[in-house]
Image (cartoon, rainbow, N blue to C red; front, side, top):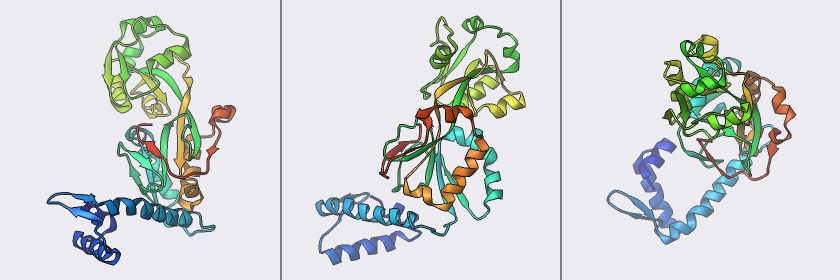
Length: 298
């Protein structure tokens, strides 16, 4: 509902978009938009016309993506959560560039839902259990949970009972946090809900590194912090949970050379784990439909 935004997306001027719409309306013999002082709204004819035109354009995208032996476009758009991008993908992305210098990668960390193929995203990396019907989804690695804290605090944590005298750091947006770790480790805490709360994993890990308390660390996201000595794992071993990191895409997009190259590269970076192959529920899932919404928080 914006000529300006449409112009930016198509690298045209708003005037060119306006003239193009006007020419289309003259050719059809009906108005498609009601033009207000500051906004656009669809007319009844426009509301009927839009979904049919959108479906036709998506069919063209699907057909183009599925052409056998299609030449690489040299561009790849990846949607990923900000935390995964900052803590894992960004430090390694240069290696993909060295291996595939002909592929230009754009990373989208916007907290929004992605709809394939409409939103111009080629693939997404999501945390979850693979429950994305109508999409191609393959598990890259299972997540492991382990409490982490600053080294100065770690020295005082000798058993799970010591957690009752410690400040717990919670991630309110995470589906699996202290309650999940306690269940997997068979640990009972007096008050799991006490402590500080954060709306992102990244903030909770930073708070833990600053000595503000103990957080549930997520492997592989905290591997670099542990290796650098900023965080220490306590009360191990890490516990394998049901969620994992998944590569998700429209079924036809997977055939594109750029998507295949990125999928193979990230699998190598994360490493082949026996935990992935051991669980039938985490095998690759392929279902034939292409359009669905994928939440960036997932």
